[in-house]
Image 1 (tube, rainbow, N blue to C red):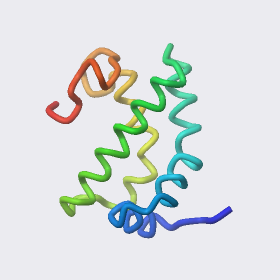
Image 2 (image 1 turned 30 degrees about the horizontal axis):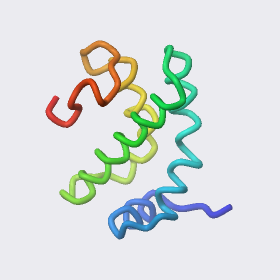
Image 3 (image 1 turned 30 degrees about the vertical axis):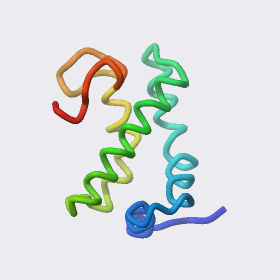
Image 4 (image 1 turned 135 degrees about the vertical axis):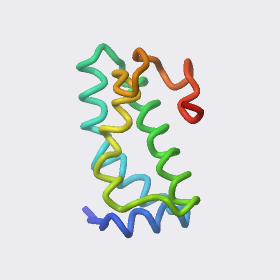
Length: 101
């Protein structure tokens, strides 16, 4: 098993390296899945919100506003989309455009 530092992950995502994405899924998706499933979500819901979290992180990387510590918060940010910590009811990303909130 390879270990990637947060900076290596950010650089890998910026360079569109598949190993960085696989690492994020391997290391951080299980926690996101657990939280979503404990809040009446499905495995597919967890995949959807986690992927949306990665997209937001990738957009921040491209704009130069991503911090390496944000990688740690990826599962929590992703699942907060599901359980509604941003002030709206729990919806799937397909039901609400999370990027214009």
